[in-house]
Image 1 (cartoon, rainbow, N blue to C red):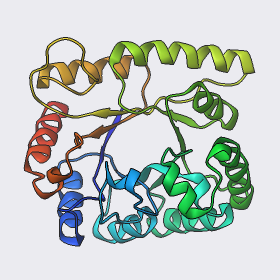
Image 2 (cartoon, helix red, strand yellow):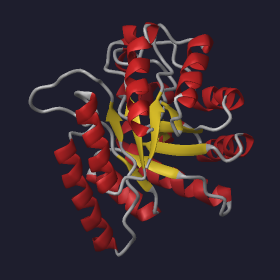
Image 3 (tube, one colour):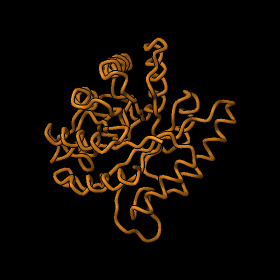
Image 4 (cartoon, rainbow, N blue to C red):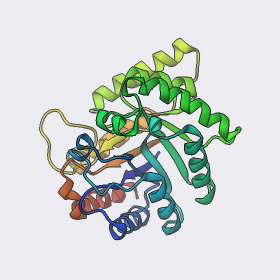
Length: 269
């Protein structure tokens, strides 16, 4: 099971030097994937959670491809309706080729209504546009499909993964809920008479004691290790660790996140 890291490409502490340090840390600790998020316009609804500067993912990952040598690069997730599908298809396949085949395209429908309005994209059609655009992108790749992860927690996202034969990329679940969702995914695949999509979740990473309900990846290192074992038993092909807990000031002080990542890296050895 591959393990990756969601690197913050936004916030007051993020700049080229910080992104370089993140990349060196992720690759140096032996993680398998380095992934970043996507927003195009930092409208108030986006800024409330992910304030500027927000580094565009294709540009950022292209730069990081030249800094790294081994780690796979990807998006968690690219908001498909924001860009013309032929533009996205070209950027994605170029990044895949220029990085030596080290690119994974995680995709989603988006949530920031004000950002959709700023871009002139109809918010209420975002699901349908995502489906249309993904079909166009795959046709443009002419059989050279790059790895595709379908992000989202809804049944619509699961059906999209089943239809496309792509991996399903759920975000920040409690373990029990994720296990139930995987059962639902299997039922949908059987209903459509299609193969079960690969499981590639993004989970939290916060090594601090937790009582009661917790997200997968939260708790002591022993709890997180147990979560990873349960995910492996569920058949997860990859897991992306997300150390960002919601405070933009964390981007100025990544040392806590790096310590947590080092602890997880140590239990893998």
